[in-house]
Image (tube, rainbow, N blue to C red):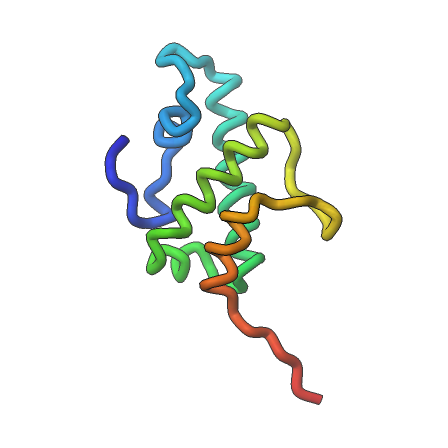
Length: 105
């Protein structure tokens, strides 16, 4: 796998390699991986309160995205709601870059 340092650089091919899929995976599989990648990036963005462009400044978030994609691929679920157990490594990495959204009244 090539070195990926930005969230925006992650491709479907990178995800397939991370998941150790065989080289001949089909269009349906590529479409699924593309969707999972989009969801994982959006999850990281919403969790941290930062845009994908802002997340590019943090190379460790690449690992969080890949782990999320792997979890969703292996379990065939999309993370929704507060009652979902998210991988501890993911929450730790994203927590490092989370924006403190305190409200002042």
